[in-house]
Image (cartoon, rainbow, N blue to C red):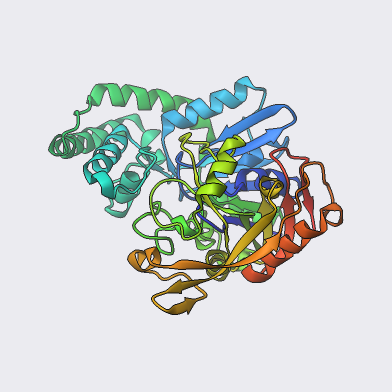
Length: 421
């Protein structure tokens, strides 16, 4: 079975952990979009791993991982990640493949990203300033450089020089510092030497694995409402974070996909700017006081609120979600009462799906259904039927309101704190 795993909210749903769990029944894990603006956290025993570009499946011995064509790659950041894993005893040789047609994130992308964000002032998007948006912009404008260029030094240097000259002019117009061609050239060609053994035509390789009946798991980054087409635009990322992005970002056709698993927290969070209808200061303060909900990539405190079934209902529809994995249930263990947003009220109308106009969404007020809390720790539970009855009722309501089958529940950061329903 080939499985697509996507975030059903605004990212940070716990996809890294669920991918790690699902990898046990897969042969290959594929990352098909985004860049090192993602942060997937997996805890194995006493060890904690935070992965940004490499699929979380790499932590399972014998599994192969692919960084596919839809990803934008900062070669220097990727080398750092590879070396960090190797130092911790994770073997990557023969297990990691990188698409030769994946686009590069270059230093001018990062500087332009930061300069543009600063100029926006109060209207900032909340970018991670990793250069992801400008890199995808160059890809769409057909001026990007790819890994296939990087491994050909003469070709890379010629193209890089022209791109730096053009982007230095843009940087200067934005008040930024120009880049040294020689410094960038050396740094990136050094990274190319480390990456060269991993780079290949991943589309051809993946199709060969399909013919061998290998089971492939597609690891999404970010979440549905950060999708460039379906998210809360312009407060989104620059790639397709929904299920369709797994096809275009890997070269695997839709009819070869067997199921879509949507990951969502038992409450709602968001990093950065943009609307969050169920945002609640008390929920945020509670979770932050517990040391939870800080970004794995940026360290920023996440905005938190009650579960938003209006949003997840739309996410289920857009992604074709078949099954749900619900994480962070334990974050609600101490509450006397929990709430679920079942609809929005907007200018006198009841809405069951979020409006596409961000300004309209800002006027939406959540309509809540209240549930009794369970006020008992769930962190040691390993079976659905052993959960407190009120926790079971709450989870069933999340699935029913979203419209998909509840399949997996997570009650803590450890690999063992996850069980099937």
